[in-house]
Image (cartoon, rainbow, N blue to C red; front, side, top):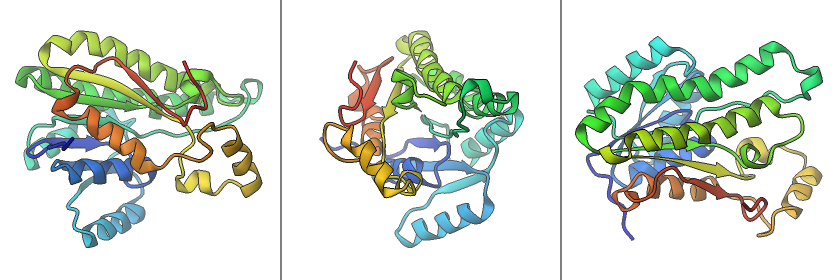
Length: 249
């Protein structure tokens, strides 16, 4: 099955590393024009140069996803420079782990603002345009821990479970307008962050994954690209658990 996104404009939040970077490359490889945001100027410029050397032409904007006004301005700029946004991938997110009894309000608020407020800040400004044109794809990147929970992550797990609530509600609002909304919930993926975990702990994690390995960012990106395509028009409100069988529902 060949996916053709030629002429489509995609915005991937948090696209300069890990899963987000793989999503950017996969969407661009299918023909989409891809934009992302960043906070770290040095890291973003390194990524832009490295990907340009491999033939990609990404647009990147320095915007904090918790900044409602800043997100609206970025979206307006993208649509002026690239065209109306057809595909949104809400990928930006952080963890700030500790047990609830030790958790500060700052740790709670920061994770909720970045992981959940960003959904509103990025999606709300584009939804009317998508429904008006009769076509749109929204993919929210959640987590296995949003499905099963995790010790020390009440803040993070709350946001990742909330993401799919957002997906299901919005999917019902826009289904008849040609817009789909779906969630992808990765398990443990071989990103730089996971590979930095001590090897003995990483091996314990892998031992709990039935397929016997970590996932790859490219595998997550392939699912996102399918959900962004015309072929996925009959898929909406779904949560794709992509975790190697570690958690089955």
